[in-house]
Amino acid sequence: MINRLFRGYFIGGLVCLLGAFPAISMARSFDDIMESGFITVAVYNDFPPYSFQDGDTPRGIDVDVAAQIAKQLNLDVRWMWITADENLEDDMRNAIWKGHIITRQKADLMMRVPYDHKFSYAIDGYGLPKNEMVVMFGPYHRESWAILKDTKKTNNIDTLAIFQYEKIAVEIDSLPSFFLGATIGGRLRDNIVHSENIYKAIDLLNEQSVAAVSGMRSQLEWGMPELGSRYTISATGLAAISIKSWDIGMAVQQDFRQLAYAVEDQVTLMVDNGQMQTIFDNYKVTFEPSSLYQESH
Image (cartoon, rainbow, N blue to C red; front, side, top):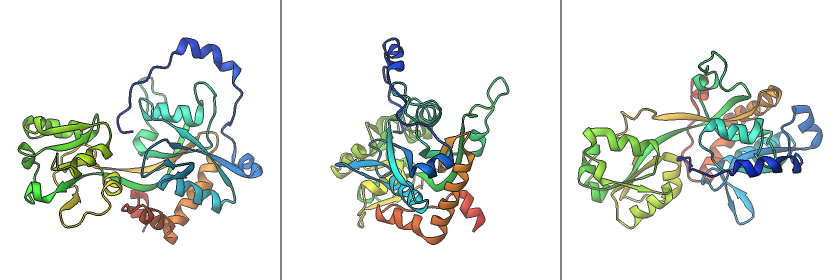
């Protein structure tokens, strides 16, 4: 998920097929959604603990947050499972404003959108808004990078210098991967082990093949829910990383701001009444309110 895997699209063949597929689900106005009795929500496929399928049952933090929002609006939920593309702009295009390249399916609401005011209102090289087709809003969690350490292997040493001698696993192409490879003059580079995903990195830690794993705190907590006395999770050593934490929110098509306002009201209610905390507790993940709610409380 962090790394945007390369994919072939076979564009020439697909273009000819587009006209043969009806619009299964189109982004709709708030009034249309309320009249229909359901909302279509885009969530990332196979991305625990945020969104995944347990057999035929959708599960995850984002799934539960969206389901609670829908319940409070007296709506049913229809899920649109998406796979990460090359970047966030591509994901939002595929999910909510242009639609799937083949089916043209769109969601009404997209979850797990990194929320950043500067990004939301970014201007391109021609002086035009880069993200004018979408509205990003409703940050409901603050994500951060952390390191999961085996204190026995690291001898309780908190500095990154220990990884000149012990191995640390990261997800390939993640920010911690680039940061650790460049810090301390590149002296950690030979002890960085790259894994396909963060959970395979945690498997290496459990096998004692590495002394630590660096990744998103929530995924580290989900992957190692029982730390015991041997393991710790902290951001110690990552003070110089370019992005230490970021807000996670949602997005809708820019024509449908009324939907954004209605959903954001429900998010605020969930934060205030403890429902958001309960959802995170159910997955044994630390809930950190976004900067928006930290400033207002």
